[in-house]
Image (tube, rainbow, N blue to C red):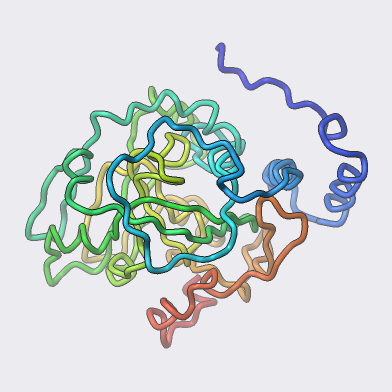
Length: 327
């Protein structure tokens, strides 16, 4: 196929010698399992890029949002990760397993027309297309930290609307306890689904009170632009106090349920991925310590904050729970 990834040049050819040797030293000392090698190598490639303020980096005009955007109330004042890194370093296994595969291959995804089914324990089940859905709510900008379970992180200026507003519109019944999300299933548009790594389609879920929390966002854009395909267009979930894999992309169904739904990564590796997946530096993943993280664009690691720095807003949701058991 013509979209075969080109060979990467050796790091020594694209970075200063001191930087290259520093990376080698980091890799030597990392002691990570072999399964993490690809992710780490990709992360270090990005770490060599100079981090700059977003206005200093190229952000394309295509997809610019032309209607008013309300500034969100929960922004971090940390510098956003560059547009280039946010849109080229992704986990979206429907398009491949390397971090740059989504940016290379997601052009096959057709995001219009697009509709979302909302059903289950709601008084007003419905199927809504993206144009109608977007017209229901004013867009907000939320500059959130994003922490991956692989121990790298970003700061991303999302555009979207609170999931709570959508749930209010469909009126959950008194039996609704959880909210389940499903990604598009179409291996023609998402060639990674032809591989049997995961049980497709990708599914995720939240407890209803988590879904209704004001921090929980349905994102339709980032950096003032429409959401790029590789970042989960046209609609994805953003829950900033949880690990990034909870942020399901390209959503086509939202179902409210009485029972806790099974989710894709719990089904694939239940000892590694819990239902809650709250960012917790005190509970390590079997393959990655969660005590610290490397912000894309930085060399040095930084301590990871409980609930990714949003403990003041969300810790009360888990009062009395053993967070080592409910990981």
